[in-house]
Image 1 (cartoon, helix red, strand yellow):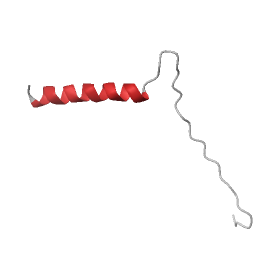
Image 2 (tube, one colour; image 1 turned 30 degrees about the vertical axis):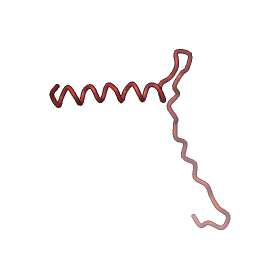
Image 3 (tube, rainbow, N blue to C red; image 1 turned 45 degrees about the horizontal axis):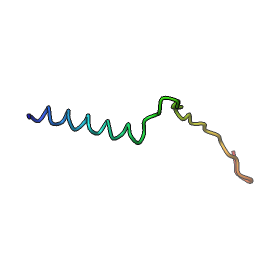
Image 4 (spheres, rainbow, N blue to C red; image 1 turned 120 degrees about the vertical axis):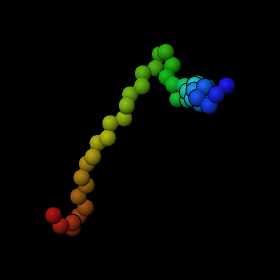
Length: 47
């Protein structure tokens, strides 16, 4: 086995591990988080 084939095999194995812990089941939906930024004014702060 050459280096390229070895790396591809390792990447494939790592993908399988990630799917085990992070992958969604058939009845699950993955929602990407959306960041919301809010400015908070503290009492006495100057603008």
